Image (cartoon, rainbow, N blue to C red; front, side, top):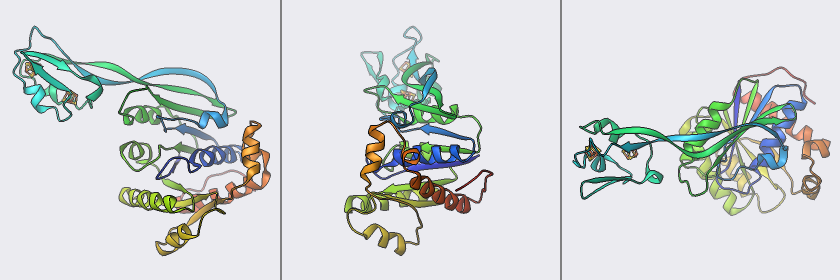
Length: 290
Ligand code: SF4
Ligand code: SF4
């Protein structure tokens, strides 16, 4: 299975547009493809592909629970917790579940075996189908801080197919790493603006650090300046996809249509981009291309 992550150094660059249209292009070309929305703080692939959700289940993490009868108030658990999720006040242990990172250290080191672990719901996983594309998304509950466990659950939920398209969270921090870490290829989406270039540089640093092959997609490629292209040239980074600032794409969405279906020329653009990804990732799949 070829795992392709669509990522960007910042939000609002058109990452989801590219993830969904690429998935649809592949499905229309006869390949089996799954679409994962790992942008769990703001999942929006569903707005584009309108899946039928067939199954929903909670995403949970393990948090400590103290048996006060066994507890001696020794404070070892509070001292070992790097995240200040435990306090011992007047001999009584208080757990701040929202701060807990589920590392398990307190449970392991409690000398009285007074701590057990219980599941705590932090989000929801949904599974469904968008046409013939299996679709998975995670949603972090409002007020929760830790999205990586929900992203992990979405990744785990996926089955087998020729291609897996992962819509990653924006940025370059832990949630993105969780979404892209074992992918075969990353398509870094940016815009030709100074902010776009700055965030692209950070995203390129992340991809290089992870050692995952990558290329760039420039959305709204006819606005701004050519600094992104100059940067890519200087850094020997390939540009696999360019999408102009085409009003007809927005109009298609307002009618509930995907760009590659409403505007056939974009199917060719995505097909070309896919051939480049296949060539670089070294995994050539069966299927028709335009
Ligand atoms: S380490 Fe165990 S015994 Fe010590 S305060 Fe924490 S829960 Fe109580
Ligand atoms: S599991 Fe880890 S993070 Fe959570 S309370 Fe225990 S030591 Fe702290």
